[in-house]
Image (cartoon, rainbow, N blue to C red; front, side, top):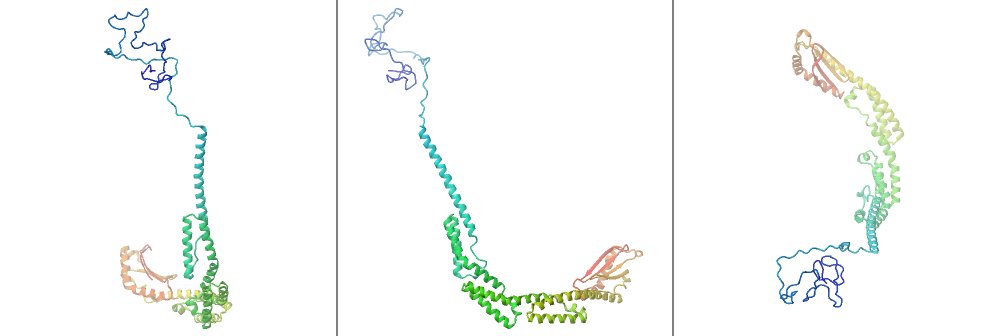
Length: 428
């Protein structure tokens, strides 16, 4: 049969047209003939009572087979039939996935996510464990590797390389292996090296050996060789014995050496000794002799007593030296005044010239009077003129006094009529 809408042939039992979707209408069959009620080809259509009269006899009621179709001047517009109360067909919908398949898909996704999380956690834990073991191993080395043999240094190099390689691979098992090897290698050497280094630290230097007697130097060399031999043999027991013997030998000697060096700081220059009294100098010589005797006998108790005696002598001597320095400064000022170096300055327009001692400073002060009417600039110029004549005297005095007083200073200052210092110069 044919679609009543688009006219295309469709299956006889189709409910809708597969081309345009219009509902299919089965044709009515005329009883007895089995043909559709629509006119058959070559048969005139039946006329009802109200139909218009048929054509004349000259023309058949319908076109015969083979006759040309009549020409139409205008194609009639075919209206799409409207069927009321009939459902419009929907677009075909893809069949939904069965519930069982959806469950399987979800399960697969969950397993994949769990596997990804597990892999990440595995590598994270592995990295964390590797870092922990790496930190536990710590630094592979000793405080002084220069005292190791070539073979021991090669072993250290290999262990360091293995440690870094295993850490880069995050191989915890390999790191554990390196840790065990390092502990096994380090255990016998670490204590041995510490003992040896401490012993060598106590060895006498050249200055110390110069203070030893000939017998002490020979014994010192013998004990040092014993320590070296035990270490090279990696014999911890022999090393401990050699170090104990060395400690017993060097401790009393080193103690008196330290005290002797402390006493040696109590020294005076020749210029300072020239300021001391004869009694003080004799006491100093006596203490020096006792110090040499106590050191030669390695008498630590006597040396400690001498430290106290030297401290008391030093305090008394410093007081005596300070008084002598002050007398020296004042004597120099008195001699300068006596020669007129500070007072006979009228040619420079100076009056009220005076000098005195302030600590280790000699002050020479001059002042202009008001009735001269000299400006501060003239005073400064006058200072330059005065110092051009007297600078030799002041500098030579400072050089002489510096032999006895390190921080000695001669300060020359000029004042105006109001007593204000206008210009000054220091000689050291």
